[in-house]
Amino acid sequence: QVQLVESGGGSVQAGGSLRLSCAGSGDTYRWACMGWFRQAPGKEREGVARIRSEGLTWYADSVKGRFTISQDNAKNTLYLQMNSLKPEDSAMYYCAAGPKSPWGGSCRTAPYNSWGQGTQVTVSS
Image (cartoon, rainbow, N blue to C red; front, top):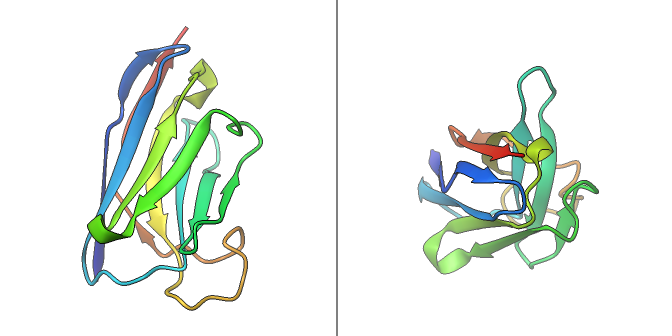
């Protein structure tokens, strides 16, 4: 069983930056897809960014140009660099692991079955 632990959340003023990390441990293996999701109070969970093991990335329109997802396979760690933060980015952020490699489907529609506990991001205006 894999464990995912997020860190790096916090409170920041609008226009600021944060870098989230997600460390994987336990039964780690090469995931075909990993992603960052967020959920604000009263709203549905939404996908923020996804990355394939080969390095291909996908971003929600609301974060394109501001957020960057990356991974360090040697460290089993996923990152989310968040710049130019806005109050509407405030949410609990979760990392998730999708299917194991190989996976021929889209990371946008892949099932994400392993989740971290989340890290809170609060952006004040």
